[in-house]
Amino acid sequence: MSTTLEARPVAVPVSGDVTVVPVLDGERPVGAWIAGSGTATFRPVIDINQLVGTVLGGAAVIAIALAVAAGRRRSAVGAVTMGPGGWVSIKGAPRPPLRTSTPRPLWARLIGAHPAGLDKPCRRR
Image 1: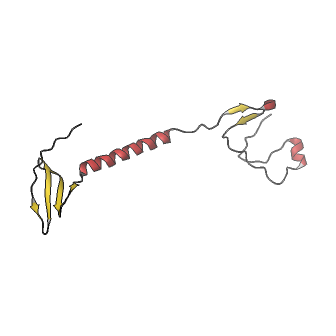
Image 2 (image 1 turned 90 degrees about the vertical axis):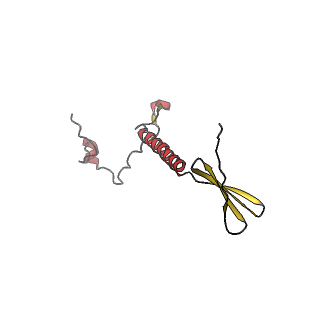
Image 3 (image 1 turned 30 degrees about the vertical axis):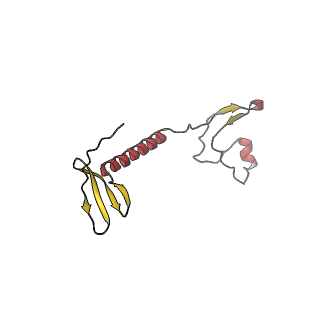
């Protein structure tokens, strides 16, 4: 890749020992040479169009990455494996709710009664 510039240096005197020489590419300023007291420094001009394009491109990449990450969902149940003696192990499954501290009465256990609630569906026999 090569870049060719048609630079027309124009000396612009500044007060003191400093000379500013703007560098143009056609009519577009590219930078300036600042010369004084035995040294010369090139100061490039910030290209606003390139800066805006870079920021928009970066924002687009981030938006696409977030959309792809949001589209991928973890499975509801992890890997299911068989353990010794027929035990089933489910990786990544939520833990079952803790039991209440008060045990069920003996009569409820004998007849198989459960508390009325919406968390368990009714079983018909």
